[in-house]
Image 1 (cartoon, rainbow, N blue to C red):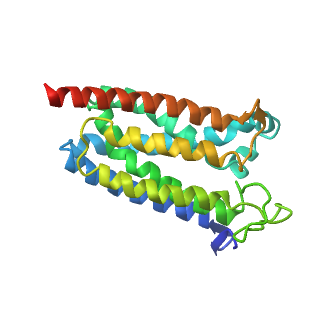
Image 2 (cartoon, one colour):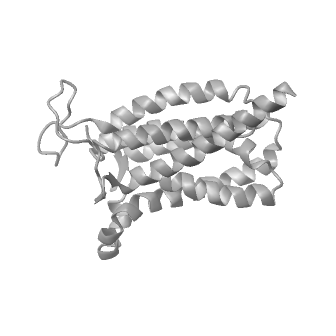
Image 3 (cartoon, rainbow, N blue to C red):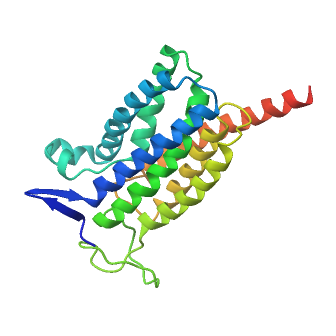
Length: 247
C-alpha cells in the first residue's frame, strides 16, 4: 500500500499522519467524555490536555530516537524524516509532566490518568496501522499463511504491527468498559498499562528493531519496568479497596 494518501501540489499527505491525527481526535473526545463522567472541571482539564498533546508528540519522538541514539547522533536530520514515534517515550514523558501539571492545577493525578487511559489504546491502534502502511516495525521472517512482504523485508515476515493493533483493539474494549465506573483512582490506567506492557514485551521477541542488550531489546526492559510498576500499584490498590469494603 502506498504510504502517501494524496498530494496537494508538491506536498505529500501520508496515511501515517492522517491516522495519528484521527487518534488524537478520538482520544481527545473520549477523554472529554470521561472528564464529564468523573465530574472534573472541563476548562481546567482542557488546558492540561493541550499541554499533554504536545508532550505526547515530543515524548513519542524521543521514544523512537533513544533506542537508536548512536545512529541519530551521526544523522541528526533523520530524526525528522526517518524516526517514527515510540509509545513508551510518549507515556513516560506524559506521566512525568502530567504529574507536575495536575498538581499545579489541583487535579487528582490518578483520576486524570483514568480519563486518558482508553486514549492510550486508541493511539496504539492507529499508530500501528500507520506503521503497517509505512512498512516499518515488521517482525521476523516466517512462512505462516498471513505473512506479509514489505519493501526491504527480503521475504515474508510477521506483520507484528497488526498483532499489536489487534491486541490494542481488545485492550481498548476493556478500557472503555472499565472507564464507565472505575472503582478507585488509577483503576483503568493501571490495567491498560499492564496489558499493553505485557503485549509489547512478547511482540518485541519477533520485532527486534533495536540492538539486543543481553537477552532483550531496550523496549522490552522498559516494558518489564512498566509491568512491575503498574502491576505493583494495581495489587496495592486492589488490597486497599477490598480492605475498605470490609471495614
